[in-house]
Image (cartoon, helix red, strand yellow):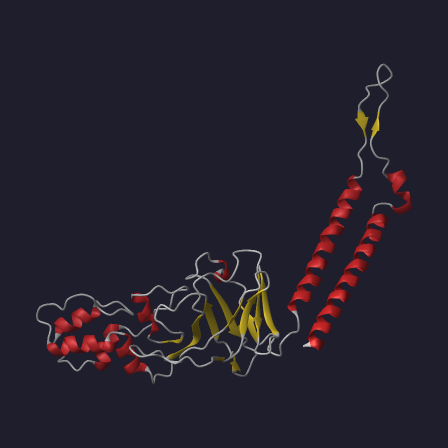
Length: 318
């Protein structure tokens, strides 16, 4: 709106005026530090000795080393101030969610050179005591001017059906990994105790944590099989965590055993048996933007997180 544009212009003019004042002040400091009125006496510059046969004719003395050093230091400081002013100028008006939701800076996700590996992480501060809706929020590149809305995600992914993706609300300590490309399983979702199974046949970046219940624990808890069925128990013990077996059942495997393995040791069976566990739901969302090309530059990029009013929540510069 008009007020917002006027505010930005005023902030820009104010920043330019401050920068001009700092430059003049810096030059004055440089003049004083390098000698002021006494500089001509202190720094006489370079001279030549008289030519032969009176002397060698070679030069002696140095020209402006002290001046160059001090001016370089001051210029470095002015560059830093100028950078900070420019950063404030591009930041715009900040959101009420500033410091409550942040872009994680200790990640190389935006710098990846593949659309399937590129991602940005946002997280809810520990100090925040409310669930914050991300509905209508956007990510924007200040360099390329690319802007994209952050979509929703299903709280519980169900295999074999079309999963709805409502808007996400981030609770304290929760985070959202926003990947540029397509979802390997066709939907955005929240991590749970069973999602490690997705890694067996799909390639997620960053990798999903494989923290599923162990197959032998599942056998002890859910298998309705005679205790003397050692063939079944030995086979189950060899099944790796968060993986459904691809091996043929050994000779002598009972029908009860094969049904147990087929119905239990996989994502669907895991969800069925554990969805009511207190530790079933995780604290991480995986949201996929569905783009076919990269959004972020590998270097010299400024990414802004904008709320549903277009105000700046956080900025990531690298």
